[in-house]
Image (cartoon, rainbow, N blue to C red; front, side):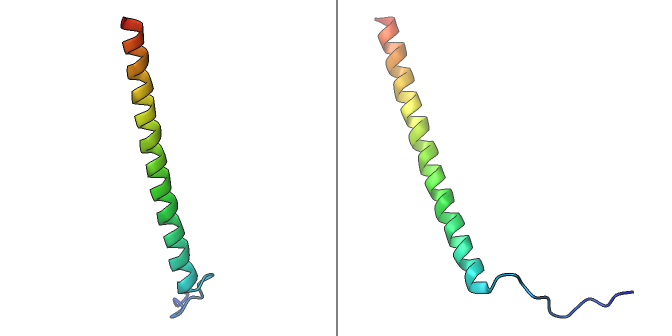
Length: 55
């Protein structure tokens, strides 16, 4: 049976991991804002088209 190694070497340092997590968070926030803007734009354009076709 293999004994588990007490310390495993991480490919990244803790600072690098924190930096990557921060970048992921900001990218996620950007995507969320982008999705909200796209959704709002779609709703506005859809409403305009429906309003225009009714009149």
